Length: 494
Image (cartoon, rainbow, N blue to C red; front, side, top):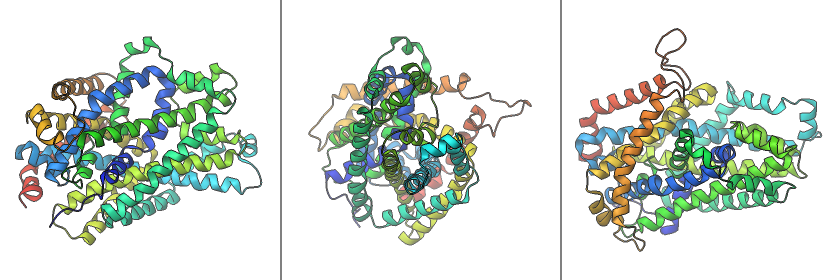
């Protein structure tokens, strides 16, 4: 039986954009651009070309050739003994998906919160003047032990599963045709409003100003690479999943570049929407810069409503912003769930059973993040850093298969746009060195936390501890190694 395919090039391009454009663009990128300005943006663009695009090209070509889920496609490409690597990639992306889906629920909570403010007698500004901690209390309330958030989260999973069970043409493709253009339109509107606020242009100037002294700080390099991987989807295996539905004559290179540049455009639009607003509403440029450089994690969920509360018509703009955030988060969640469904489908399980299994797993494994912000933060740290490992596994697999030949036989076939084979080859090997260095740097420095807690015990439950990260990675790798033969038999031979 032939595998279902996207109807045309824009079907898979929009799916790739939906995968890449998410909360990382509207929340994480503006925060980092605010911390480091143009220095970060310059490195972020550099890593797009030398890290993310080679990885995305590889993933697209592997999925297009083998047309299976991540475990099956990776095992067929790398060989039986490396099946466990495909398993790790899948688990890492699912680890992200289980907590990332909570961001979608939070976005919806803030969307309804913003809509509710329109119909209240007192404006949000008046409420904040009476109770300055109002927004902080709301955030703390929905992010810890809140059953409404859990119910919304479950509803999001059911909605996503309902869309995906209809297939890539009638489900994922149709959803993205509505979601992605709507997202870009909403972002452009918010940018227009922000730049027309008094002082807004100063925020734009700050965003693109380069401070050359920052390049001596290793943290900015780490942040730039991780943001590129996070926002483009490089190393997630999602492109491998989506390209399994591509047509045989699909232009791998052009589609990859459209998706990558579309993602970066959304990030820049998000920065241009938020940073000018911060400058416009701050008492002084010094106050705005101090606030941005603090790397405030609450920029989206507590600061944005506060900013819009000070703007005429801000209640409506707040609705637009959180609608855009919800659309972005939801469109990225769809291919994450699709990845899980395709791996389950490779086991020859019926569609209905696959659907039930996926819904149950997402509700069960996502619940702890919906209930506890600390657990959410731990999973964000563990599997976010894990993207460097998954990227390394894909790079190693390509390196073992003669990168130049692999490119010419899979990536270049059907592509009108062709990159130099020498660039691709050197990028693969150079990135392996970069990946190992970054992992060493993370684990050898106190970038996150100590290995042991105050009592001298292995800090397994520390939110950002290296011990927690290594333990969770180690368990997944050991399980993958133990089940390597079984996984190969189930996902490849069967």
